[in-house]
Length: 353
Image (tube, rainbow, N blue to C red):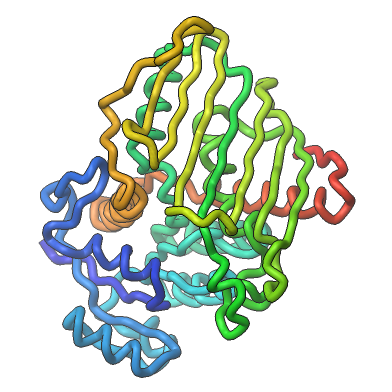
């Protein structure tokens, strides 16, 4: 079988994890080697504005280093473009690749604006190309298990859902030479960067948001964007939700999900051992350790990113839909926009159409 050949654009931290997906022994969901499940694949070329970095990575990956993005998207040897650039560049680079007939995987957020997301989706549809956002949330082992338990009705009807994404970006936010804390690079802060994960998760597990209100905070003076935010409201089915994001927690990156139902509660915390505990009522003081979800504080997120890249490549070679519907990636950006509208109006309630 002919391998799927990828051009990788933007050679920062996340790119390195995407590149793991192309290794024969790549470990995806639940830390399992998944090479037999997916088609042959190879990194054909790389591009970054840093000439030294792209030359170095080309040697390490045994591939071509393009000296311009134009030459990359015009390269007939490349089937797909994998974009891991600063947020502000996602739309421009994804559109150019789609216009040149390349399948595209773009890191979240799909684009800074929902109108841009819809434009990319339409171009891909019109050109019969595979396109989606690299939303690893769909491939996190714990969340897949939560989905199964919810479908089985283990905790009854969900009443309240809380998500919390925490970690430290303080060093990068303080460095004004980096894009992370600049409006012209990241477009927004914690809501734009972390929000899409939680908003996608809520829609996948529980349904759409009907209304929200949001507040944002900036603790790092050198930064131009918020480093902490809280978004709360209700879902279409009446479930209450609260999503919090912080970039100033001095701890390993973590995600926490709490689902409070009419018959019990599920708590997921990626740094806890085990990561998932189920409580069956008010007298279940110790809960049930859900050992089906492995404890992997270092690689739980990396493995889900690898699994997402594998899924995209499988869709390209297998002529099937991607697991992450690009429409849901666009939806996440729509909620980001609604949250910022609430912040700009001092926390006024925003109704989602």
